[in-house]
Image (cartoon, rainbow, N blue to C red; front, top):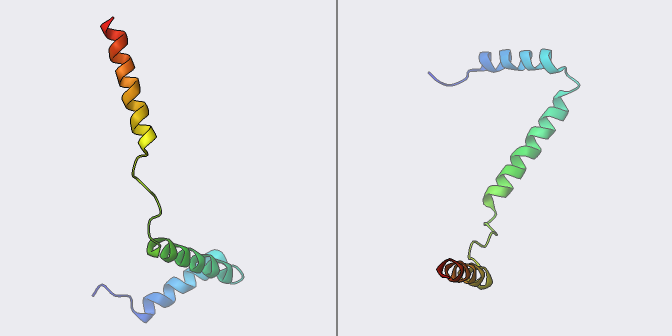
Length: 74
């Protein structure tokens, strides 16, 4: 129960051949294979994004806050 038997797979294959035609099947298979390889490659690579904010970014925001406080106080 829950698995696909050989009969079901044969019916699915016949429907795919009818929908796409026998000439398109190698192109579709190649595209699916490339997509799976790219997905596996992207999930196995470490993240290269550095999420640490730079020092100048923090300093600039602190300076702008000080300027706003000076202007509002006068």
